[in-house]
Amino acid sequence: MRIDIITLFPELLQSPFEASIVKRAIDSKKVEVHFHQLRDYSTNKQRQVDDYPYGGGAGMVMMIEPIDRCIAELQKARTYDAIIYLTPDGQRLNQKKANQLSLFENIILLCGHYKGVDQRVRDQLITEEISIGDFVLSGGELAAAVLCDSIIRLIPGVLGDESSALSDSFQDGLLAPPIYTRPENYKGWTVPEILTSGNTPKVEAWREEMALKRTQSIRPDLLDDK
Ligand code: ADE
Image 1 (tube, helix red, strand yellow):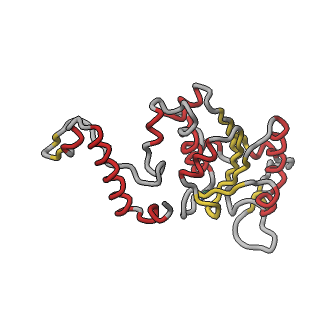
Image 2 (tube, helix red, strand yellow; image 1 turned 90 degrees about the vertical axis):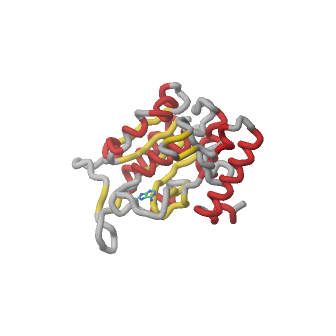
Image 3 (cartoon, protein in one colour; image 1 turned 90 degrees about the horizontal axis):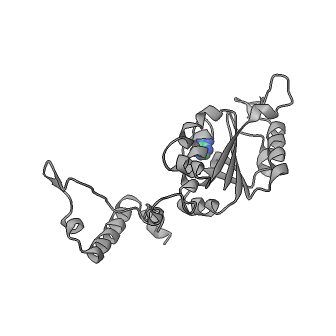
C-alpha cells in the first residue's frame, strides 16, 4: 500500500510514523508513506496557499490551485483508489471504514488547515471526507496520523500475531474484554481465577461474556448496529 499525505505541516506528522507497529510496517515495505508540502505546489512568489473567503467572514481558505496541482502530479505516476479529505464535517471513522481502506493500493490524504479548503476541492477532487470524531482539531494532520495508524495495522502481515487485530475492540462490533498479566496478585488486587484455570473454552466464554457486558455498559449504541 502507498499513502501520499498532502499537508502544510509535515513536521506535525513525522513521529507517529517513526515508532512501533507503523514504523515496522514501513521498514518491512508493507506500506510506503510520502509527505508532500502543499506550498511546493503554489505558483505564487510568496508560496501562498490560502486566501480570504469570498463573501467575507473570519479565517482563511485553502486555495484550489496548489491542491489540484499536487494531486494531478501524483496521479501522473499512479491511479488512486481514494482521495480523502480529513475534516470534522466528514463521515465518522470507524473500524469498518479502516478495514475497507486497508484493502486499497494507493490513497491520498489531504490535511486541511485554517477554515478549510475551497468547496470546489471537495466537489471536484476529493472522493471521501473523513472525520475522526465530533471535535475540532487545529488541522487534519493529527487526524491523518490516526487514520493511517488504524489502516496500516490491518495490512496483512503487519501485526506479528495475525489474530491480534481480530481481537481488537470493534473488530467484531464489541469492545474488547479486560486483559491481565503478571503478577497474579498485586496489593491484593487479583486476576479473575478463570484466566489462570487453563480451561481455554471457559476462558473464551468468559471473554465473550465480558466483551458483551462492557459494550452494554459503555457503548450500548454498538449493539444497535448488530
Ligand atoms: N480536522 C479538524 N478536526 C478534524 C476531525 N475531528 N477529524 C478530521 N479532520 C479534522
